[in-house]
Amino acid sequence: MAVRGLRTTAVALVVLIEVTGSLTKPTPGLSGNHLGVLLGLVGVVVGMLGGMRVPACATTRQIFLFALLVASSVTLFWLQPNGLGFLAMFLAVVSATLRVSVSMGAGVAFVGLVAQAIVGTVAGGRSAASVVANELGILAFFVVALLARRLAEGQAQAELMLTELEQSREAQAQAAALAERQRLAREMHDVLAHSLSGLVLQLEGARLLAAQRQAEDRDLTDAIERAHHLAKAGLEEARRAIGLLRDDELPGPEGLQALASSFARDTGTPCKLEVDGPERQLNAEARLTLYRVAQEALTNVRRHAEPTQVELHLSYETDGTRLTVEDFGVNGRPALSVPGEGYGLTGMRERAKLLGGELTATPTESGFRVDLWVPV
Image (cartoon, rainbow, N blue to C red; front, side, top):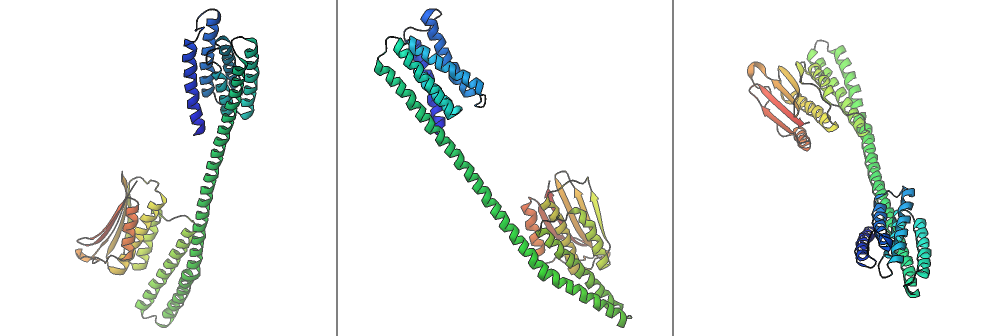
């Protein structure tokens, strides 16, 4: 803010120098001292405004422009004793200090002090007090520019430290979230996955025992077989959930065929998947939502219905992606009564809304349909 204010002041001083120089005798012209005044005024404009536009890293051009500004100031200081040409020296000092470096500003200030002292001594029309006042003015402007530069550097450093602090806080928050996810993954592994593993082993033993002792009771063996498959599927889901917490790859539409095949195997009910439209890349949340909705819909069919057929339809539409899961009953009779608003469908509906999509779950003439749409 301080640097910007000084630059605004510098532009105002250039205008003041030009106006005053045009009205002070000798006025600008094309011969003698008049030509010198004209060149001095032009040099002030070129040196100051050019210095503002040239990059600070272009040291050679900056030195040339500062030299032009100093020379123009000394020329006006010499030819117009009653003018304000000496102010251009102040501009040169401020510009060099702020735009390039403190050492450059100090060098310009030194050259300006010597040049104005020589001109003030050699040329007539100026008192010693006037020359001393100009010298003090150069020093004062150098000090002000130096303080402004230090202030700007301090502000930049403070902003950098603030940015680093914010980044550090974000890193700490991410580390804390990762640690919590790792803790949850360990808990799920130690409790849920362990329990499901034990259940799988127990069901495997029960299945073998039933097969040996009650070979004539196929219903019991089949029931245990289905329970065994469900327990294995639950164990796989638990491991997949643990993998998600550990940033493993999220399941997506490519897993729908496996869900359909698993449902058909476990229930004995035909389940097919149809895909329409060219496949497109979906973001992680949309991929996971499609998979979870299909999974939840098939779970509801498994629990609440006795369908003769289940169909999954994945369609890549122009403005989004649509997934339909529908079951069909016997001879047109509904296979599934409308289930209550359980946590599964409610959670899927909320997940769809977060993506800007929509999920509907409605009965049909022959069964039940779950329809999910997510935008591109």
